[in-house]
Length: 492
Image (cartoon, rainbow, N blue to C red; front, side):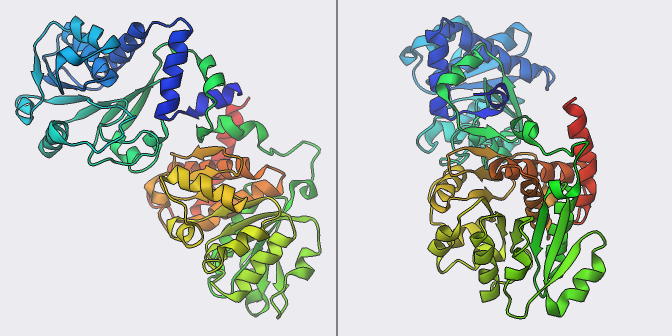
């Protein structure tokens, strides 16, 4: 595992337990790990809120032990602290029992009545490995805290949130701040977990990075560190033919979609970009694209003559194409070329009645970019979003970009990346077409499909974030140069 992958790793709850165990077996004291975790929670709270009455809700396991440490540190700093425990204090064990014994104040049974007078809640009831729906007194007190609008800091995850998949088991509170340890978990980034965690702080508690060489994480947070070393920056002695030739297959009615994809492919660095346009609307495409070449598709709808040029090495099919036999034909022709192919929108939906035909046709580098509706038309996978994307990538043999505020990029070899920089402004028409163009433009320049998809998704989100409110899809390619300049400068 590279240093960059270590820094971007996401750990499931099981992997985090293994990392803890490896650290302890390697000589790190478990009591010290819990002390560092609880202290990190107290420091994060003290850095974000003024002193006020705080209620620390402790669970019966190690998460509760972290809560007892946090309570002790805040009390020593002069905060009014009240501690509630779910269960019997005498049944605590191990490091949690040790740290509970260090708390010299009263410990009360958890109840909604404890909220009276509290101005801040620390939720240390259950961590990321919860396996059953939250219920009983724990659910009651957290629901009451939410109803009162009390600010809440979650330890590891908001109780009731599955750290592996980001799903809510029964109920989970909405935190203003979540403090986790060593590495984030997929559930911190996947919806609805991302929305429930609030600000996420990842604290270093003394677990050495070398444990990751044994844990071997295969899920990562999408950051330039993962792919920037493979980014195809122009060479001083390069020329346009070395930078690839992207082909975007245009539709007859929604002509703007293909033009957006083509513009995006050009902006991200493809040396040449051509739109293959139906002959009837060739003038519309040709008249609106100054730097983009436009080539007419024969009346038969076949792409053979256009694909006869082997320099056209990355193909986009789907934006504005329509769900039709012609779109299916174009997708199959593109895939049969064994060149890099991006299938989006209608080029995915057109296989809804026969997904197996799509899977069998994928013979070269291919990226599928469905949103949830399109995904469900061609895949019947179950589980959380990460699991479904992974299984779909294996099933199809393609890199799958399952879009959303928590876009997952999954490769057939099991690697997966979760993206978390997408702002809500991206939820507007045409932005998916731009993303397809970014991916194809990077693959045209020789970037491997999985890394090209990860890079494109991050650049797409970063361009939208930098533009901010008022974004429309046309703004994304025009904002990209600023993002690329900053990225290139950060690598010097």
